[in-house]
Amino acid sequence: MKIVIADDEALARRRLRALIAEIGGHTVLGEAADGREAILRAHELAPDVVLLDIRMPGMDGLEAARHVAAFERPPAVIFTTAYGDHALEAFEAHAVDYLLKPIRRERLAAALERTRRLTRAQLDTLRADGGGGADTAARTHLCARVRGDLVLVAVEDIRYLQAGHKYVTVRGSVREVLIEESLTALEREFGERFLRVHRNALVARAYLAGLERGPDGHVYARVRGADTRLEVSRRHLPRLRRLVRLAAGARLG
Image 1 (tube, rainbow, N blue to C red):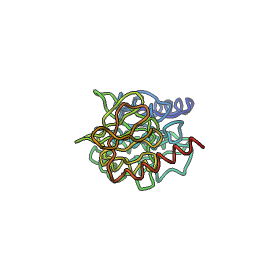
Image 2: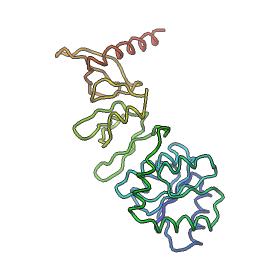
Image 3: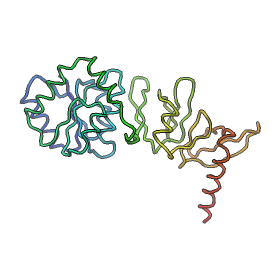
């Protein structure tokens, strides 16, 4: 099978490479040092399996697995970790297996053999059954496809989210991308980070610059770092006005 290894420790990656070479019959296509890089390598190299550490800087392995599981043809994920307190979360994140470090060759060989025997239908069923519980942590990035490439947008960098007919526009500091996700689900996942201003739009609380009335009589939200003004519905206007007044008072104070 074709494998990508993701671990923030170079020594751990080298050890996994050596174990895989001893087992034989598999090819390591590439390596990654964090969750974000793991997603990009998995998309670029299309492995059968990703050996994925859980505790990594930036984006951890649990979040990376959630993104990888959304691929059209996702690889199987085997978690490799020094900590035993993430087993339930790992299987909720669609993992085929969970290996504790230091990893023994026999245990790794068994996990790879189990993965090899799983059919595509069985992998799809595993992912469907492991859809992530209510306690799943909010993602640090959103994932979009732009002309065949994978683009990761940091959630803390997002100015607003606006729903269209089929897609949601994600406005970052530099560019806009489209994702196929529900605005309601995004609002539920990210809680108070975003404010609902209209049935079709969420604005990042940190980037709400103020409110203004347009020539058409409607009220619009100004978003710092974005040229677009977003219409505010009457339903959400009172809350937004209170928040803008509180923010202005805090600055004056």
